[in-house]
Image 1 (tube, rainbow, N blue to C red):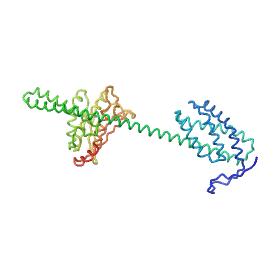
Image 2: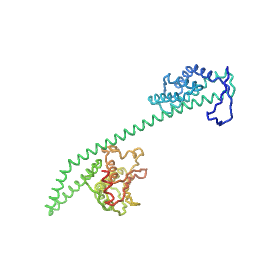
Image 3: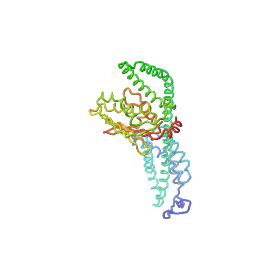
Image 4: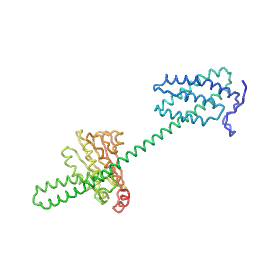
Length: 406
């Protein structure tokens, strides 16, 4: 065997370890590995079938090329070829939807098979310890490089797919909101004229029947239901980019607004024997009054629904002001909402109720966002809480940014 002397260091000339002189005919080793490539490939593919729970059938040309590249690595610069192979291999493995753990396992099996076949051959050459060390180091480096590029390209493909899925989800979500906005705007247009006519005639009837107490009671019930219908339309219109039924921002007293909301839900609280507590710190707020009422009514009705299976039914509303923000919390002692459901509560059309529409909390979120605020939910075994955060601003401060977002 002809001897060649190699110094396994980088071209900068700086030695990072003790100089090690290696006398080894790398071209001869490379040719020997090429001769062994079919055998290595066959055993590797047999090991994959035998050892892995999930069957991974790699095309033979892909499988054998890896050994060919390792052989060439000893005598050529094959970095680009190795990257190209890793990319092709990664794309094929991804197309088969193999788990990442299975893919790494195939590389582990390859390393074991490669040395199991090659080492007996090397023993016939009477290589020195230095020769063996250098050869193992070079081939090990080549294997590590191939695994790195395979993982790198596989990761790039996964990330690309995730980005595409997120873009698709975002597009579908925005498409739903756009459709809801169109429906809401059309509904408001179709219902506004008859509602205005109904309201006008109710006021005329009320004025002309002041002496009839019983009739006045009926009219008040109709007016109450009329206002409720008005709020429902207001909430649904929050999906539209148009202002909420042409309502303007105005300053309201939070305590008064919540008192009016309490009046609306009192029949349910009494009828269903629910213990209701409130802790309200007086505060003024510039807001869409009817829109904000709709949010609170929706959250309170949801809280009442949540405690139906409890013996001691409890709903608590808290309003506090701090550092320029109003924090409005609606709590109940109903069953815990699982974390995976909390994450999607505010998505349009998502509901856990048998007859639910899945737009109530979406409406709440849209209305709060039109106030430049936020809403979130946290839930545990003791209580579930929805927290609304709203910036406390004056009407003058609120007009410009709110109009810009509508």
